[in-house]
Image (cartoon, rainbow, N blue to C red; front, top):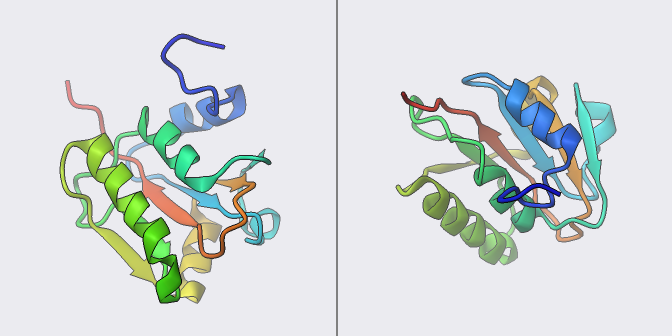
Length: 140
């Protein structure tokens, strides 16, 4: 355990977040997502929920402010809206500004996942709980 570091951020995940550069993307996937077959690097985090992982990751990872939308989710049925609204609130709070979240067609989300720097497989059981984050820069 480390002071001020969210305990969900294990050594493997911390190393990946640190190794990522500006513009690299990371995907947090739900338990149903085919993570292993789509990941270049895979971190398995069973028992975790996607919103908690989002908050933990955004406590350290800056979102890219060089692009219009540094975050993406899958296009999903309306019952997913409360989950996505929670993602919106978390991203806005972490960045201190409104964040545009793109809703992507599912095949496009899968394609983008295959090029992401890493995939974090959560234990999230809610459907369509997947999201993608694009790393920004830390200004001097």
